[in-house]
Image (tube, rainbow, N blue to C red; front, top):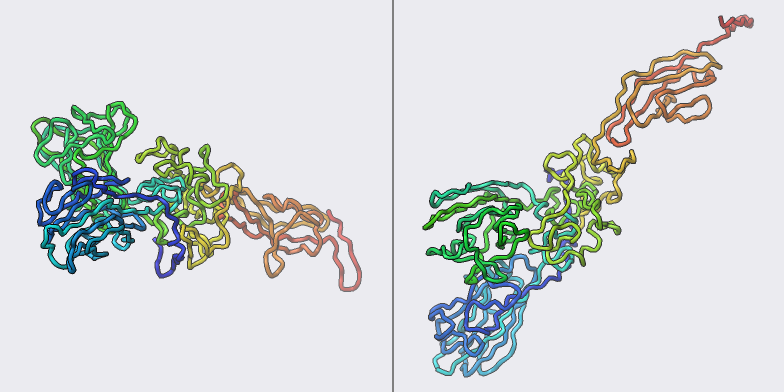
Length: 624
C-alpha cells in the first residue's frame, strides 16, 4: 500500500476522454396488450405499473388500446416503468404522443427519476396535438431509472379528454473503454490486455457449500468485504434456491428448476432460447461444467446460465418463465457484504452443491484506475500484457506497443475477450492460457513489484529507472495518463531486460548477488616482473579498478594490465608508478541488477633491485 502523503498520484483529465460506442435499447411498442412487453435489445427491470387504477392493460382509465398506451379522463391515475441503466454513459428517452380535447390547464406530463420516488417533469402535453418527444436523461442514470406518465394540472373531467403514447424507447450508450464494440458492462476484458476482468479483481474468496442431502430447508451465510463481483456455480440442484445479498433477493421469486415442482412463491426458470425445463433433478456434469451459473457483476446486475445435460460443454442463458427480471443488488463498497444462500424444503428430496466465488474491484497501485481498466496495474513500467504472458500465445501480439492486443477491437467477438485466447465466445468464456505467477505465491506478476521474489524490484530488473527505489517507475510524485500508464518516468514500456540472454526476462528469473569466497591479497613484485592479483568469485561479470588517490577508476586491458574483466588481474612489467597502488574487484550477475559485490583492497608493492648511496656511489645488488 502506498503512502498517500509521500506519493502523490495525479489523474489526468484525459481519464474522461473514453470512447464509447456500444448501444442498447429499452423499448415498448405496445404491440400486444401487456405491461410486460420488451421490444428492445435489453429488458426493462419492471413491467408497467399503474397506480390508482386497476393495474391491467385490458381496461380502465389507463390501458393499452390500438397498439398504444391510452389515457382517458385521468385525475389521480398514473403509470411508471423502470430500467436498470447502471454501466451506461448516456441515455435518451423518446416516444410519440398525441392529445385530444385537453382544455387549458389539463396536461399529461412525462417525468423521470433516478430512485423511483423523486420525479422531475421533462415536458407536458395539452390541447389537441401530436408529435415526437426526445430528451437526454443521462443525469438520471442509475440502477432504478424510472419514467412516469401522470396528469399535470387540472383533472381531465370530460369523457373525450384523451392522450396516446407510442414507441417508448430509452437508448443507452454503454461505456466501451477499449473500443471493441462491447460495452464494459458485458465485456470480459475491459482494457484488451488479455487478462479477464474477473482475474483483475482481488481480495477473493472461494467457498464450497451445502453438500447435497435431503434435510429440509437450510441456509448458508458467507461474508466478504468490498465485493464487486460474484459467481455462484452449482454442480447439482434439487431443485430450487434463493440468494439474498445484503437484504436484497436475487429474484422476486424463489428460483425453481424442475418442471412440475412449483411451490407457492416459486417461479420456473427455463432456457431462454426455447423455454424448456429440465424434467428431473439436475445432477453433476461429467466434464466439470457447472449445471447452473449465476453471476452478479460490478453494477449489481444478475445473469443466469445452465447446462442442459450431464455431458454439456456449454452454458446457455436462462430466464424466468414469466419474464420477471432479476433484482439489482446493492453492493456495499469497502464494507461487508453478506450472502445468504437458501435451499427450500419441498414435497420431495432437496439439496444442492456448489461453490461461491466473490471478488473486490481492485486498484493495485492506488492510482485511481481499477485493474480492469489499467494497462500497468502496478506502475512498474511493464505493461500488464507483458507481465501476463499472453504475448507468448499464438496469434497474440502488441506490435504498436500500446499495451493492448493487436486486432482486439475487431476480433473479440460478442464478449470482448480476444478470440485467440478464449475457449468459447460466450459470457462465461475462460482464458485458454495461464496467467504468469513467476514465484507461485498466488499473485500474478502484473500486480506485484517483485514478480520472482528475489529482492530486486521488477522496474530495475526490467532495465528501467526507479529514482527512489520504491518499485514504481520514475520519481515521486508519480503521474499517470487515462490508461494507467506512468508519464513521469524517463523510460519504461519497452522490452524488459534479459541480460543473460536465456529468453526469460530478468524480472521473472530469480537472481542473486555474486559470492566472493577468497579475497585478493597484497602482492609484492619487482620492476620488469609479472604478477597477479586474484579472487575466487561466483559471478557473471568482473571489473578490476585502481585507486588514483581521489577515486576508483576502471582498468582496461592496455599497458601493463590484462585480465581486467576476469577474476585474475595480471600486471606485466610494472613500473615505479604502480608501486603502492590499491586494486579491487567489482562483480555482478547478469540476471540480478540489484546486487554487486566489491572485493577487499589489495596493494601492489615493488621491490627495488638497486641501492644508491648518499655519497654518489651506486652499488648493484645481485638479484640472488
